[in-house]
Image (cartoon, protein in one colour):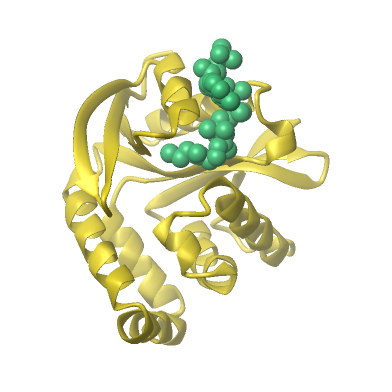
Amino acid sequence: MNISLLGPEERPDKLKICESLAQLHQEGAPQDLISHMGNDFLKNFFYPGVLASRSAVTLGLWDGKTLVGFVSATWNWMALLLDLATHQPIRALVYALTCLLMRPKNAVDLAQGLRLTLPKTPDLSAEILMISISPPFRGKRHGQELLQAIHQELSRRGHFFCVARVREENQEAILMYQNEKYLPSGRIEYRGRSWIWMIRNCHEK
Ligand SMILES: CC(C)(COP(=O)(O)OP(=O)(O)OC[C@H]1O[C@@H](n2cnc3c(N)ncnc32)[C@H](O)[C@@H]1OP(=O)(O)O)[C@@H](O)C(=O)NCCC(=O)NCCS
């Protein structure tokens, strides 16, 4: 098993990587708002944009040539959203209109989520966008390894804090973050559920 940086450079296997990221995202968080946007959105728009963005970093966990886990973080949501919009402007417009017209509740949820999240990543801190391990590979400390690797990467890039927003019911993830020295730092109500903000210093081993 090894961990490597994904993007932003063009890779010949980028399409396949985005397909795996989409699958891991949907397996890990099927109820997530972004998962509800569908596989095409994740595979062809969201992850290609995240990998190309200069405001986000993604690390992949590989079993040989198979991507079996990943973690993504951003230190500037506003810049990431702009990158997503400018990377594929036509697709961005189509998805925005589809969301507004076909799923107005999702659009309202998204707006509320961004209002909660945007001010929380002012470059000094970074937020975990997603961490997911393929089910057969869970429980083998790979989640913790990915977190440790992303802390090092964020610290190397000059960020001080790493924050994660976790659903209160997701005890596996909360325990994983606590094992990695994250402290609960607040609770928010969003989409009818409670979410816990957790935070840690990126420099600490
Ligand atoms: C959360 C997730 C990334 C953990 O990955 P993992 O590789 O299975 O976790 P690890 O083996 O590194 O476990 C680290 C710690 O997390 C906790 N943990 C992980 N899975 C657990 C489980 N099923 N039950 C209880 N605790 C668990 C434990 O405290 C564990 O440490 P321990 O083994 O010393 O007790 C993985 O379960 C996953 O992909 N879940 C779906 C996606 C998700 O919820 N992501 C979080 C979004 S914020």
